[in-house]
Amino acid sequence: MKCFALFLALAGLSLPCFAVTADGAMWNSADNENSGYIALEEIRSFYKFMPIAQPRDRAGRAVGNGTVTLIFGPAPAELSIHGLRCELSHPTRSDDKGDLLVSRTDLLKLIDPVLRPTYITNRRPVRTVIIDPGHGGHDPGTVTDSIRESNVVLMVAGKLAAELKKRGMEVQLTREDNRHLSDQFRVDMAARAENAVFISLHLNKGRSDMRGAETYTAAPAEPGEEVRPVNEHDAANAALAVALQAAMVHRAEAKDGGCRRSRYSLLNSLSCPAALVELGYATHPEEAELLSSDEYQNRLALALADGISTFAGVMNPETQLKALPPPPPPPAEPAKVDAPVKKADTGNKKASPRKRRPAARKKSDSRRRK
Image (cartoon, rainbow, N blue to C red; front, side):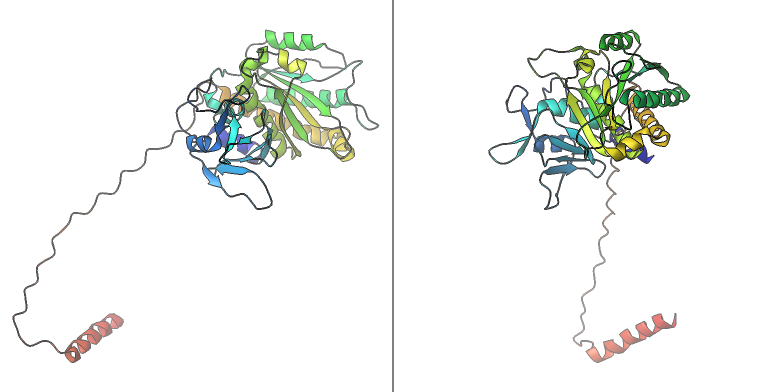
């Protein structure tokens, strides 16, 4: 199905069947600003990608294998994974030879979890989906003449919960009416749930020309930094964000605002895989009208349900990557047969060219008659 074909394709890639260790020890890196950087050529070789020529009007480096394409650039912190925008934690760099360098953090906590989600070391089956309609009560969120954030996200959350229940999932809503909740209440609710995944729904605000859906996850832990509860799931967070964003872009046909990183206090405090979804911009006139419509809210709910279902599928420890079939054996070489040795012509008289030509014509004529 097109709506989440991207992530299903990524989850089923026939990639190398050996894992990068959690600390990335197998990668050679040039120490640079704590995290270290890996040469793109090394990454390309590991995933069996090929260099891909970029159009002249677009800067950046591209590698891929026909199923998935990674494009770094044009901005130093921008990555496109098969057309889906992702924000890097560290901008790419170039070495003295002009080769592109990618941060170890982005490789281990964004690129690899998306390309090989079934290699996430601490993955576990999703038992409960916590749906959090943001704001509520005296905190309405973004309010314009035509839209109220707390109301819209509550409507989408209800539709999403109903769809997930149809699919046999256990669902909890942080609120089912217009009440205010503290972030701590939300965190505690997720902590009590078994093997939970947390999805917080919001609307964005900005200039009147800004639009599009965006998915945020907590910024991954860097070497030497304080590790927050959610950082245990940095890799799973990246896979979740891409699953949700891909589904919204392909099924709900939302404009791709990208998968981004943030240090929201709510996300940092959670102890399960989590994402904060900005469904669109309440301050964009046309998008606000869409977000207020029942039809578009249904599309968003179905898309998010697809993303959650896809993520739950690859997080199941029983799900494995497809392995490449062994190459067929080379065809056996035909046995060599010695050519018969022609007897030497002992005669002194050579056949004249005039006598050989009619014989050739007679043979050709017989073929035409057949």
